[in-house]
Image (cartoon, rainbow, N blue to C red; front, side, top):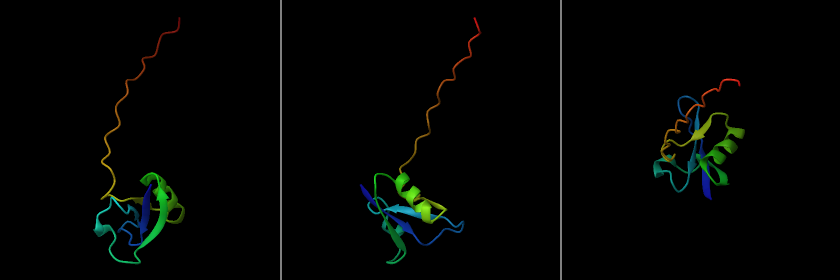
Length: 83
């Protein structure tokens, strides 16, 4: 499990970022007292969900989020004619 923190310094849009202490670059932790410890979570989605209980506009850190592959396209089922 990883340790997650939420940053107090909001973006111009009012968003606060949730950071993974191990994966985020040091620049995400600007100085002492600018982040709040959220806890230990299995992944960033769990940490963001907990952060949103207190900060409505919490999001995952753009620096440490894993690259997301586009979802595969699934074939559409063809409707069958009634018998």
